[in-house]
Image (cartoon, rainbow, N blue to C red; front, side, top):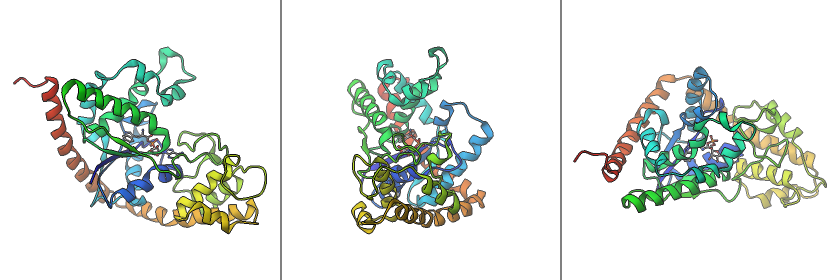
Length: 330
Ligand code: TYM
């Protein structure tokens, strides 16, 4: 049994289908085999400008989305990052073990700060991966299920853990990324060259997990396709390959079986089938999500219990860390 940690940023009302396929789907399955800790990383949301009321609302709705996706608070620890102070304490310590060079090489940082003058790039954005490392290491996490876009952050996390261990003695397990073979990078429906992303301003880029059926249908029927008319996954058909990944994930059927089903049929039939499959998948999610939000008392209790459990584990680690680095008087 490994200790699993992962997190989601509450930067939208609900996650999109890419978040589910690339991450939550694995989180749900890992609960059966491992000790799991899942976190709504509200502190990470502060790395770009934010609205306090909206953040408050979105932190709750992110937690509700995780439960509606199948995270079981009876088996997994579910909590808000800012409610366990040890994350920020370890962040500072790891900041002092990390290097400007390695942080400057992070592609997410480079992408997000591309059009900003050096003078005004947020320091929080720069430190983002150190906070991520602290999230996992404060629980001595061993396995981190994420989508492909987080791979580089995971490599940095491993470097920081190794450097700390070399300097102060073996303290942290070096965490392994857990990235799915299929669906680790779901691309935008309107442009398969870019990933599906919460920060997009193009409504047809993504499917929100609470999109009503008619919206899902419209977005899928409008999705860009490739030349030709055969429904097959191949490198020269990035759009159809992406749609097949989505189809496969929401139906839990292998891509080859779906290709067979649409042999000799065109893109139109395929999109209709995909739209229905996504709608059937999202229907129960939406019902559960609304039910959870209707009972704020229950959600508060889940998050209180989760934070208490997480705090206990984090405090245990921090006692060892403080001792190792010389922050205890005797
Ligand atoms: P966030 O909220 O941006 O994304 C949550 C998860 O969804 C995955 N994901 C995708 N997977 C496939 N296709 C996509 N288009 C797609 N878009 C997003 C992400 O890889 C992620 O797994 N930095 C993290 C949050 C975090 C974290 C951590 C994760 C903070 N601390 C510690 C692991 C461990 C993030 O990107 O969240």
